[in-house]
Image (cartoon, rainbow, N blue to C red; front, side, top):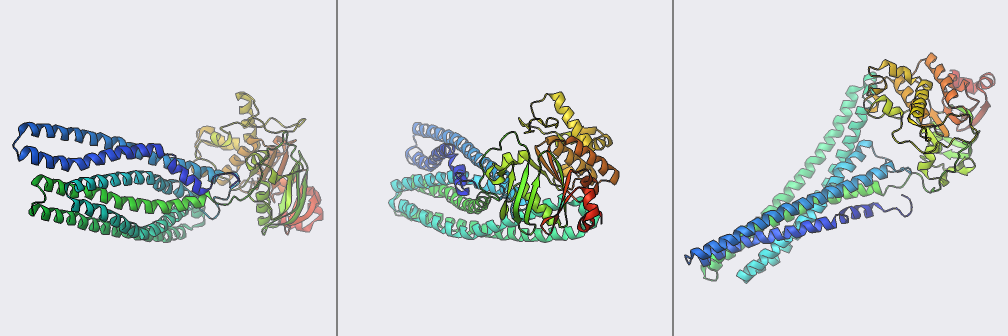
Length: 589
C-alpha cells in the first residue's frame, strides 16, 4: 500500500475501536443487567429470612416489589445493551468489508494476487463478520466479568469461604478455557482457508460454465469441485470437533466448579454458619454463575475464530501493491504519445523500444501471446516493467496516480466481463467524468462525460454502438438495449459479448485506447465493418489495437510486429505482408 496508508493491523484495530463508545454503552448496560441477575438470588434469600420465616406480609410485599423493580431493570438493560453490542458488531464488520473492497479495488492492485475472486468474497463476508463479532464477544465478556464479580462480592458478604472459591477459581477456569481454545483457533483458520478456496473454485466454474459445456468438460469440473469441497468439509469437521471438545470440556469444568460451591455452601448450612435464606442465596448465586462462566467459554471460542479471521483479513489489507509510487495527476490535455524504451517484463517483453504517435491508429501484431499480455499490463500499469520505461507525453507512467492514468490510458482486455444488468447499463457509464482529455484541435468527437447534455450523451452511445456493431446485437434482443445480459453477459454469444465490450470501451472515449483482440469471435464481414467503425470513431485520438487480425491491422496507420519480445518489423499492413515472412506467418497463417 502507499506510504502513509494504514496497515492491515491498523485497519483491524480501528474497526474494533471505532465502535468503542457503542460497545462501552452496551457493556455498561450489560453490567447493570448482570448486577440485577446477581441481586435476584440475594433478594430471594432476604425474602425467606425476613418475610417468609418471620411471616411478615408487609415485608413480603415490600421485597416482592423490590424484586419486580430489579426484574424490570435487568430486562431493559439487557435489551438495550444487546442492541448496542449487535449494532457495534455489525458496523465493525461493515467497516471491514468497506476496507477490504477498497483494498481489492485499489488502483495499485496486489490484493488479488494468488487469490481467487471467491476467496476474496469469503474474506469480505464471513471473515469480516467473525472479526466484527469480536465486539459483541468483548462486550459479553465484560458482562460475564461483572456477573462473576457481583456474585463473588455477594458470596463474600454471605460467606468468606464461598467468596474466595469464586475469586480464586474463576481465573483458573479462564486460563484453562484459553488453553483449550488454541486448537480451535488453528483449525478455524484452516476451515476458513478451505471454505474460501472452495468458494473461489465454484465461482470460477460458474463463470466458465458455457465454455465447459462446449468442451464437454462438465464431469472434470464436477470432479475438481468435489475434491475441493471434500477438503473444505474435512476442515470444517475438524474445526467443529475442536469446538465441541472445547465447549464440552469447559462446561465440564464449569459444572464441577458450581458443584464445589454448592457442596461447600451445603456443609456451611449444616453446621449453622449459614441461615436457610443465605443457603438459598448461595445456591442461587452458584447457579447464576453458570451463565457468566458459559459466556466465558463462548467468548473464548469467538475470540479464537476472530483471531483466525483477522489474520486472513490482515493478509489482504497488507498485501504489497503490484505497482508502487506515482501520485502526480495526469496533465491535461493529454496528447496521447506513448514511448517505450528497453521495456522488459517477465517472459513477455524483452527490451521493447516503441514509439506510438499521438492521434494515430497503431496496430501491434505478436508472434507470442505472452508478449501481448505483458504489453497490456505495462500500458495499463497493472505491473511495472522489470527494466526500462513507459512514457505518456514524455512523462514516465510510474509518476502518475494509477487511477488517473487508467482514465487517460484505457486498456480494454479481450477477456473483460460484462456486469449483470441491461445492455445499455453495460455500455453507458453511470458516472460521467468531467473531461475526456481530448487534445486541442483534435478532430475527435467529445468523449463520454465532457459536460454534454443528455441528447449529446445519447448520440455518443449511439455512435459507439454503431462503430462496434453492437446496435445489431441490440436489435436482435427482445427488449433492445433494455434487455438484461445476465451475470458476465452469459445470455449473449461470444461475438455479441465482444461487440458490447468494444462499444463500452469506445463510449468511454479515453485519450488513449488500447484494445486487445476485439473481434476474435465475429465473422469476417462483421470484423471488416468493425475495423472501419473503429478507425472512424477514434480518428484523431491515439489508439492501439493488439491483434493478429488482418482486417484490423489493415486500417491501422502503422503496424508494429513484436517478435521474440522485441520489435521485429514496422510499416503498414500491406508493406509488411509483402516484405516480412514472419509477419505473414503470424497474421495470415
